[in-house]
Length: 342
Image 1: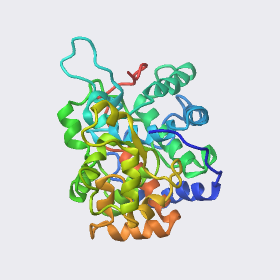
Image 2: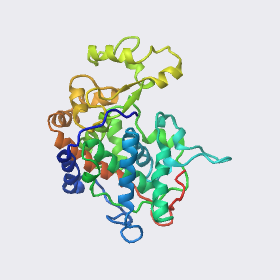
Image 3: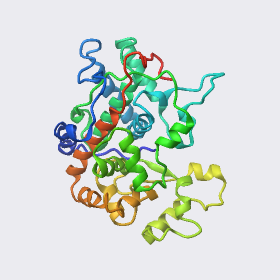
Image 4: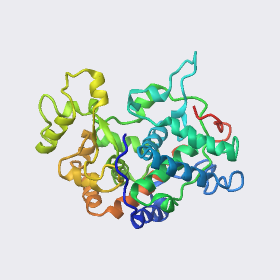
């Protein structure tokens, strides 16, 4: 994903996004079965932990705007595969039996892992060996979402519980492929995947979470099947021609298709807003899985409502993100607090 122009400071919209999550928290989350997660988990052991994450996320955003999008995708990939446990961040060790989740085809295009190290280093200087990498991912996603929504750190008070532990091992590639829907997934597949990841809000929550596709970009390797030999009949013709101009033909060299990209939203490419849903209704969904939301009777009513009401989208997105961030936390004895997230 790539940064774009800086966004206006629409503090009211982002404040609505975060404060409304307090009301909706009960509706989309299944809770923490082992009782480890709680609000203010680090209040005694590292009182400034959340402030440090927020400060670092803000600084990195102003240097590299695309980082805020990266945090959202990283949390999604980490939490969808078994647990929110920072297994995504593990590198492959020499001689290890498995390989890193980061090298899975489902993780294609993910970036900015090095900036997780920047945040973690700041925490280690303040409170060595205290704050987990899993909590770094979750808090960075929360604060990145607030910035992209327009409110910046002042509006980032989403009620996110902390206390996650880090996995000692990465998931297998088979687990990654099974848990994370691809760009051609059906609505049924996407609903099932998010339900398995602890998001209990059904079609409404899933429709909101996919609204993260209002920011960032998609590589042409994931688009050419909709464009060649003919543009998909479900794509707005003018939009299809634009995408053909962005993406090479299907028989282009693979590395070329992997580098070229199109933005998810050409109007507000780095703002987390409801333009995504307006695009779907105009047949300008970039990925097939996106466009299917506007066609499936289970999700279409929510697409229409979110397209009409940005505050409603923010409300549901905030609550669903919290729910996803609490998927199956590791219990005592199941994980650790890594000093090196890799």
